[in-house]
Length: 105
Image (cartoon, rainbow, N blue to C red; front, side, top):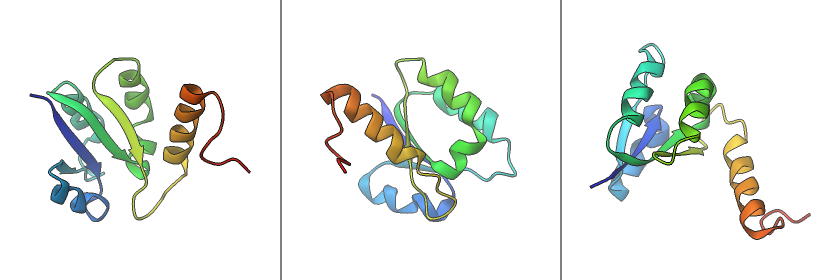
């Protein structure tokens, strides 16, 4: 059975455990690159990554985006957000629907 993980700083992800998701605190002083690769090669169907952590794992995330699983989804955290998560959602919706139905200015 596949699992779903949420990774990032503790303050941003701890609430996801109430939804039954596996939360994994990534301390930036650890080796996040190796830890992320190990996680991606485990039995996860989806991994939610905070934007702040994603900035430090850009190369690794791009590598795993080329694979079917796990799905890597960027989410905002409580600090250091870049807006890339919502931008990616917007691009995906535009690609699927054919137009911008979320942010039509």
